[in-house]
Amino acid sequence: MRKNFTRKKEKAIELLMSASSLVSVLTTIGIIFVLTADSYKFFSEVSIVDFFTDKEWTPLFENKHFGILPLLSGTLLTTIIATLVAVPMGITIAVYLSEYASRRFTSIVKPILEVLAAIPTVVYGFFALQYVTPLLQKLIPGLSGFNALSPGIVMGIMIMPYITSLSEDALRAIPTSLREASYGMGANRFQTAFKVMIPAASSGIIVSVILAISRALGETMIVAIAAGQEPKLTLNPLESVETITTYIIQVSMGDVPQDSLEYRTIFAAGLVLFLFTFILNNISFWVIKRFRQQYD
Amino acid sequence: MYKLESKNLNLWYGPKQALKDISMGVDANTVTAFIGPSGCGKSTFLRCFNRMNDLIPNVRITGQALIDNINIYSRNVDVYEHRKSIGMVFQKPNPFPKSIYENVAYGLHIIGENSKSIIDESVETALKQAALWNEVKDSLKKSALALSGGQQQRLCIARAIAVKPSILLMDEPASALDPLSTAKIEELIYNLKKEYSIVIVTHNMQQAGRVSDKTAFFYLGELIEYDNTSKIFTNPSKEATQNYITGRFG
Ligand SMILES: Nc1ncnc2c1ncn2[C@@H]1O[C@H](COP(=O)(O)OP(=O)(O)OP(=O)(O)O)[C@@H](O)[C@H]1O
Ligand SMILES: [Mg+2]
Image (cartoon, rainbow over the protein chains, first blue to last red):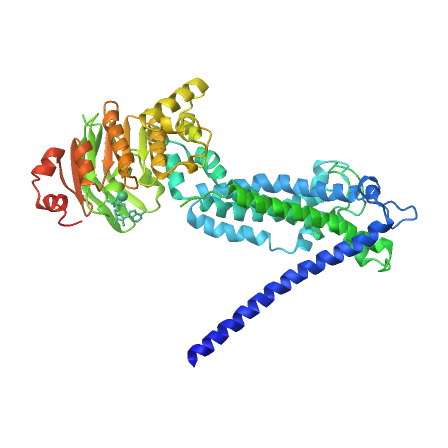
């Protein structure tokens, strides 16, 4: 009797769990469906060649151009700046925490760093606009009030904890025996960290970097607040740029009619962004599968 | 003068004392075996001589460990420099996730050897000495992790001797190996004796008898008896030693 009841309970829990995983799968499929359906309508009016080669993006103006390149360059520029900030800092801190610092120090500092990733991005956005940009303007005279550099740097600080935290986990997961093998040969900490530990943890580190990059690609508030809203095909970090995400909120919050070509631009732009993160995701799966070291 | 020596060496892991007042000396160009039941402190004692225990938090050491009459725990000893003159082989093979070649060349890079031809030559010599050359000479670029356990252990030996240290510390180097690989490693130890001072931890009494000149028996963190191997195995002076080697406990 009792046994029967437990079994029923287990069945119910199992059902609940598979139902919730089904919900997330369905949501994903739904999003992809909406994205592609509206993009399909968009591309029946705008040539896909123009979309990828036209150097101007002015769907909301009289003289319409639908070239995604300016938005893409804004997204890539801010993401590259963020990556250049986050990767060296994030990996250095991870190595410091796992190879140099005491366990106690790490156990205090790591959660504090992880809080950085939990700060609302709107706070980061204002931080970039109100503090970092004025500071940079003192160092770089003539820097415009909206620019790619300032939100790029701040976004780098925001994504750094992803790299630090996951890389530190990857480094710590390397068996002690490997560390001992290196120290036993007379290697110092620096040599052990860079010749043995980082290569051995490389797959985890690469995955952490990819995750951080995807996070930066999709980041919206920081760039919307501090990078500006001028779609511009440039790789100059001192200029004002608009990212894909900024454009998407600009349109969805504006007064563009829902069932218009102008409105559909956001789905086409969103699809491009989705493709980028999708490819990055696949690279990281491939890295995990291909480079996972077998330790026993 | 001893090659390796300890004077009144005590070691604690936190509150737990693992080595109790150990004093002994090892001559150059000999093989010394450490035997004793599991947990008696053999590995701990062995690791004192290249200060591997420094890596473990909360370890406290008193007394002296000397190499060539220099206390390696004294302040002015550079632990990294010191370790370069000592090779260590661990109980479980621990090759780096690098190529076979890079594994053996690692120590040479660490001691600052830059000449490609010298490194190539040292890698080949070390692999030959470790009786692995014939099996891997055509696949030096392959990952070391693709080797079998026994091959990995011989690779670790090659890695340790490639830099020509004067001392070789081996912690149960053959415990995970088949009889053939074990025989190869024992032969290797015999050959290396001319150039090295070797200390080997082993649970295998026959092995201790075959390879070592002297044997030290440890029990519960204490050095019970230390003498010529033939004496220890035929006519030990302590009853505990007698009981252990005849398999009555441990
Ligand atoms: N890192 C450590 N932290 C705390 N205690 C330890 C540590 N390493 C070893 N010990 C303890 O010290 C004692 C001696 O351990 P050691 O590894 O030297 O024994 P051993 O003689 O090598 O044993 P075995 O034959 O099983 O390898 C044991 O009681 C063990 O529990
Ligand atoms: Mg041991």
